[in-house]
View 1 (cartoon, helix red, strand yellow):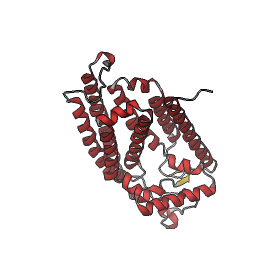
View 2: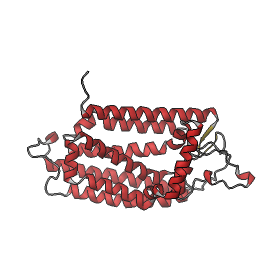
View 3: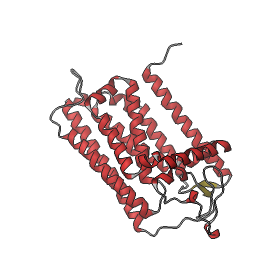
View 4: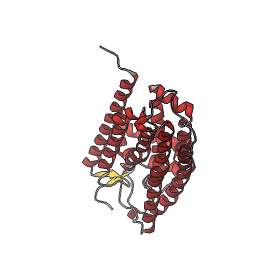
Length: 314
């Protein structure tokens, strides 16, 4: 039996992860549906949104786009934009944490809750999903991997290329969790708009540098010009893709958050169960159970994100 090449091995690993995530989401959703429950802040079409995120992720990492990206910096930027501005927000908005928790056995959910509570106590989740932390993490990932030496190394070594994409996706998931995590409209708008504004500036600055650069940064000696473009033109096109369409995504999401905040927020109500399977009290009983609050701080939201409530309750 022939051995897999590093590229084939990486693709097989991506396929296995996609299947595992889809199976865990489906199993957790089925168990919740059997109990007529769903995660706090969830919507009816979350499964479709999450599936769309997986499809975008697969098309970005496994389709011909990945092969084309090795020849063109501009196509590489399209790949990164799809990864960070399409796949990541769709995955986050699919509200997977609650479903993933319910894919575990009962004892596993207890351990899950314990783990998240420890993270809440230590604060790492708050650090990487707060406004400053999420912006810093995504900015650091983008700027570090776009250093010419690092970028060229990732193109030459499949293992580094996989690490680059994993870094981008992880940073983007933390970023979009900061923006889209369950909260009251006003809290979501104030936090989300701040995060989006800062990131628009930092990514726009990198895009502008690439666009107005006077020499190619990433071309290898003797590399053929892609799609009839010179290496410099290819880099400038990639910079424009990062700068303009990428920036527009952040602006549109910020406008949507602001418009939603102008409406009258609908108070959450109804009994639910948290990620460990413990029942929470209804507001009518005047009990304040901190596991069901959705407008919490970044650190507390780490383990509150998987709270669920009965279907049919507003």
